[in-house]
Length: 192
Image 1: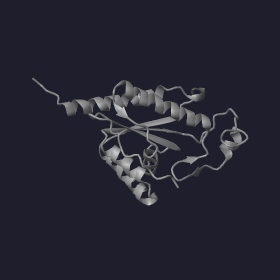
Image 2: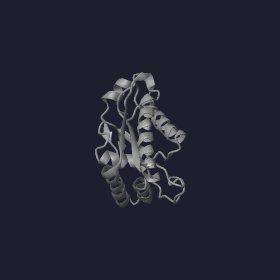
Image 3: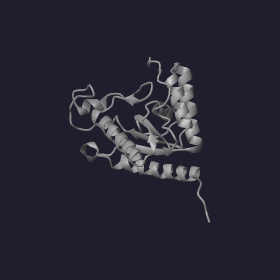
Image 4: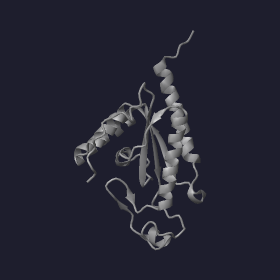
């Protein structure tokens, strides 16, 4: 009689849950029905590369939070990346981007910042937040431990993951006896 070990079954379950998280991000409501969300599921060697890049950033910037989060990435089965083409205009002329209208926003030079590119349309940023929340909700419904992490995004961008995204966030996922994302050291240096 075949037996699926707990570890094997949990790994398969996490991978399926992660794929459902991608669907949740894709089907999340978007401003004006325009989908500029990008997603990917990272595991194996690519996940290790992501953690190593986060450690490089920790060393470069002297921010231990990148190292702590890299440890979380390594201890996870996979990472769901969600990004947005945030430098595209929405067309409402709201001015939240700092420009008088969307045409000025679109003509403005797009600049790479330390972690992401901008300026960013507020509606694209809201779409990213809704997609992240929808994906995390799906993981939660399926009892898969997860946490939305900013620090994954800069490393993913440096590695060329989701190359069209101007902003990326990551959601590592795991199934352990204790949630590894919320029982961890709290002290993190302020960003400089």
